Length: 212
Ligand SMILES: Cc1cc2nc3c(=O)[nH]c(=O)nc-3n(C[C@H](O)[C@H](O)[C@H](O)COP(=O)(O)O)c2cc1C
Picture 1: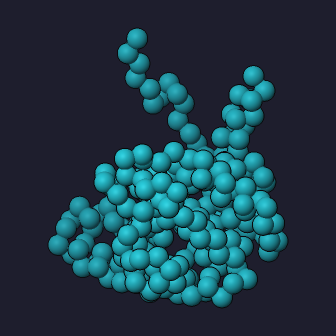
Picture 2 (picture 1 turned 180 degrees about the vertical axis):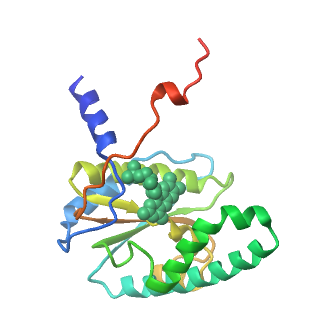
């Protein structure tokens, strides 16, 4: 019963934290978060076992962080140009793509949020397989890490531009992984410098259709 209540509180407490203090989380906490990630489910048919999922933990103190940030910045600029080109000939994309385009342009100008603005940037890589379900798999891993970070009093946000770096030669070289062989996603972790208000969530009644 106590376990159930704690879990409910933890799930409710999980938020996207996008502003961090300068304090560095201790290595043991980051290890515990990565450990939670290793416990997340994976697709048995597609996963290649122990070698299947990798974690690249880059601290703000390592020069690699600024290198990764610059590479992501350049990639964001390229994707923004490609998206603008596609939007010109696709009216649906023109309306629906505006938000993403704005985010890409901001990233291309100011650098990616979470890579440098947080004490830690973590890239999770999962070896591609058949079926191609590694992004789903990484999402479960991220959720485990997110909940663990929350339980330790740490802030977390997704850095999903990382998914766009799978085919980027420089990014993969910097992490020493073969280009195109891994699905990627990323997150930022540090001590929260904000306490965002509770968002308006739908009630169970509003979103459920029951078939008794
Ligand atoms: C697939 C996916 C990608 C996301 N990408 C980002 C991201 O790149 N940066 C970010 O700050 N938040 C990202 N988010 C977080 C959402 O914006 C956030 O979860 C949502 O606004 C609800 O807020 P909460 O996490 O505080 O509950 C992403 C969420 C999902 C599900």
